[in-house]
Length: 503
Image (cartoon, rainbow, N blue to C red; front, side, top):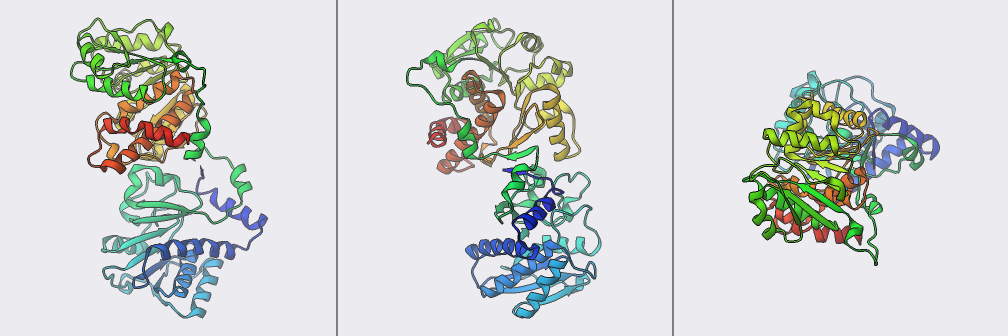
């Protein structure tokens, strides 16, 4: 699914209106019908709706929704906020239709004294402003939004929470935006929905299809996409009947240090559970018995150091290398990593302490081989690139670095963002808060290393790896709940995740 800039949405609407063809008021009716269907499925007629309406087309959606809900015998109260004397043409037409129906109360709000009392159980529909808003809310609307946010009511925003911008909110005050429990966006999510800092405004979001013209969606360019199961399935390789372990690659995992051998175990197990043919795990000498016992399927490469990573084996026999989980950031490890980056001509994935070392030694960025996959979480990203003005700025830095260095970057978190050498950004929908636990990232590194060794491109290894990792986490959360989830559970559910995605 492409994710379009707010400025592109009116172009898509206009193309649909011209080429379907369909009148703009009828397209608005189509959208409002989808909203109404969503609400009828979830709420009982005993519940009442208070719909706050602005002067533009978002307000027109709210007015059309009020009429449809009234036809379905719901109790509806409409509050038209008097920001301006003039309403958009479709908003005015829907107001006229609502008055003719005469089933909903319609009140105007010119000051805070006009606001209704919010009784418990009331559902508030936010139809004040859509994604075309270009400046922060102020004056009366800001006060109305604050009153709604402070009320003990459920809030549903149409298309986007009022006050929130579709992309960059670095100059915005999120306290002055509607804090929705649900956001119902038409056809596509907005880019800002996918950034963690905006979660308190967006709540749970869903997209409602309204029949926008497929030709313009196909033709219009966007660097942002939301991946799905069908797309990931299309990337998968088929295992051949006459294949052998050499067919599926030999990976080298450099991981672990004294007190952090768990990282090597988790990454190794995840790698082996993801289809690799052969795995060698390079660890400090004192971890030998631990790894041989915990992961007998992995071969072991021993460092001359008892406790840290100081060297690596000959790379000639390996198809891909993964480095970072638990290796620590000692001086000898820094030197060894720098040498590895200078020598390596194999597909490479960097995680955890490997990224922290580069963050503390910025000159090492220039040694990153093309196609390298970096998998930072937000704090590791900031160590690499410094503090950002906000999530949009962070995403821009991520996209620009991937393009400049010809690398793939996986910024981990809810809706993990994967960027490629062309500056495209893919957001991943799988995963859950239970995966915010120690070792989860080590598991991801192992999965991605396995895919690289099997011959997947850097981008496809990252996309498939992140999706499968999140899916296994979702299956584990279904079984154990989010609070009890540990990284080993993700590995335990990898077989089910692979089976599902290949079915």
